Length: 103
Image 1 (cartoon, rainbow, N blue to C red):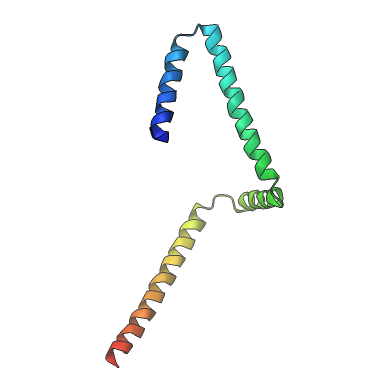
Image 2 (image 1 turned 120 degrees about the horizontal axis):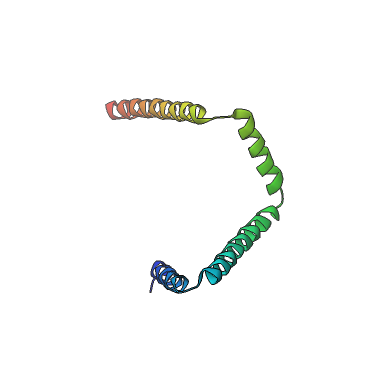
């Protein structure tokens, strides 16, 4: 059984079991699931923060985002610049290939 199939099987079993619970027990189950999710998220956050320099780099990036505001137009401009540079490079290489084939 693949990982995806196992995941689907677990979800189906969980759904079947949850449907059989009373409202009070369902509330407890939801609270427990929220606890598990929060614990996992906190663990990931702690692991990231334990990486030397990660917190400072993250703050620097967040501050840069705030200063730039909406960067959608900046990204589009950068993409266009990259594309134009690529096309210019291709044109130069085509000229080199043409000269080599002519010689």
